[in-house]
Amino acid sequence: MNPKLNIVANQFSQLARKSRNNVSSTKVNKEAVDNPPLEIFKLGSKTLRTEAKRISKVDNQIRNLAKEMLQSMYSAKGIGLAGPQVGISKELLVIDINFEDSAAEPLILINPEITAFGSTLNSYEEGCLSIPGVYLNVVRPSTIKLKFRDEMGRPRKMNADGLLARCIQHEVDHLKGVLFIDRVTSTEELKKELTKEGYKMKDVLPLD
Ligand SMILES: [Zn+2]
Image (cartoon, rainbow, N blue to C red; front, side, top):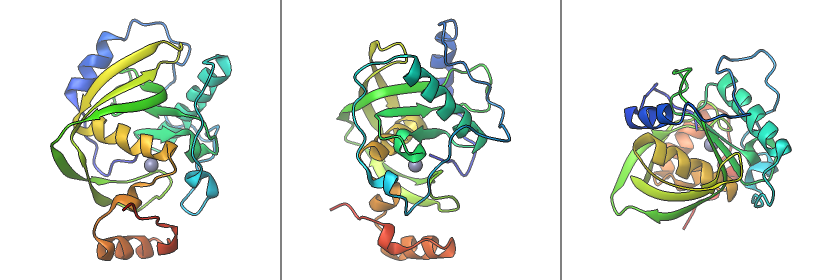
């Protein structure tokens, strides 16, 4: 996911600070690099529509991939990136809504599964590193419960709200081959925004 405005969710920042002492082999400098390790595929690429597969073993290869995804995400000024966006059909997400805070730990979510959605919905503008220049409102539940494995393969659970809940939902969609533009309810605005950036309406696969 790619934010138009830089929003810092304090709650998550506090949460991240608590876990700062955890040893992590995926420590990444948040500065942009000239040659990011991974290419981010754009709307129209098949990889974005391919369903990702579960990761059976969390090993150094997966941790290294997460690290490269983080470097590529920070370099592109994004707050979330999913495996399929870099041509890798694995259930791996990296997220950092506090990208401006060098001390805040990013989230690495392996085999993430949203186990519950809150009943309250909200509408908020989203963007995507695979659809640069396009920003549109999407309605989503404002809170979620999630289970996943961390970069050491440990099973974890978390609750999320605000920007973090939105970002996780956007990224989990990527693992199913779903893009945020598929969820935009206003066809008129969608068409206007996509054509302005040279994208095609045929690359949208509306959800029922
Ligand atoms: Zn995206």
